[in-house]
Picture 1 (cartoon, one colour):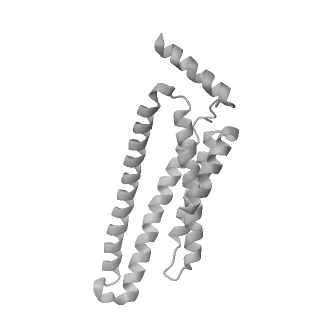
Picture 2 (picture 1 turned 90 degrees about the horizontal axis):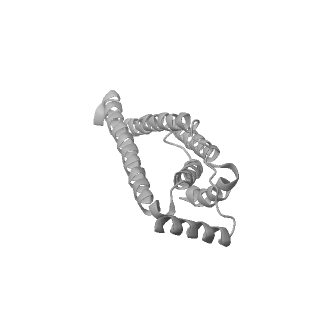
Picture 3 (picture 1 turned 135 degrees about the vertical axis):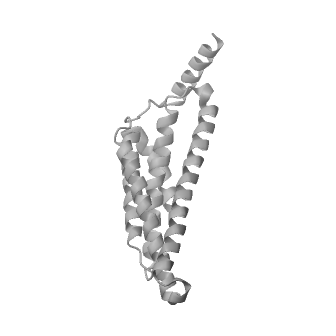
Amino acid sequence: AFGILAGMPLAAKLHARVGSRPLVLVGLALVLLSSWLFTGIAADVDLMIVRVWMVLRGFGMALVFVSGQLALFGDVPHDRTARASSLFNVSRQVAASMGVAISATILSSQLSANLAALGGSSGGPAAKVAAQVGAFQDAFWVSVAMAGIGLAIAVWMPRGRSAQPRSLAELLAAGEGAEEEAAA
C-alpha cells in the first residue's frame, strides 16, 4: 500500500511531462523486478526485505495503473467518461481476478506437488516449509512471465501524452465546446 500511495501522485505529475508509455514501461519493469526478487525468497528471509520488495511492487503498479488510466481517458469525450470508467473498472477487476486465480492455482498445485516430492505430511515441519517456499517461488515465476508479457506489449503502446488544460479557463472552454457539440 505504501508503494501505491507514493507512486500514484508522482505518476499523475510525471504523465503530463513524459506520457503514458515510459511510465508503464518503468512500472512493469519494477513489477517484474520485484516478482523476480520473490522467486529467490527463502524461509528465513528478513521481513524488512519483503516489505521493501512489496513497496517496490506497489510503486510499479501505481505507475502502471495511473498512466494506463490517463492514457485511456485522454481521448474519451467528456459525455462518455462514465461509460468508459465503468468499462475500465470492470476490465481491470476481471484481469486482476484472472491474475489472482492463475497465481493461486499455481501456488496450490505446486504446494501439493512439492509436498508429495518431499514425503508428504510425514516429511515433518521442515519439509512443509520447504514445500511452501518452493510453491511461492514457482507462483512468482509465473508473475515474472506475466509482467514480462505486459512489458513486451507496452513497448508498442502509444506515448499517450494527452493535451490537458493548463488553466481553469481552458477547462471551462473545453466544456463549453462539448456542450455546443452535444446541442447541435
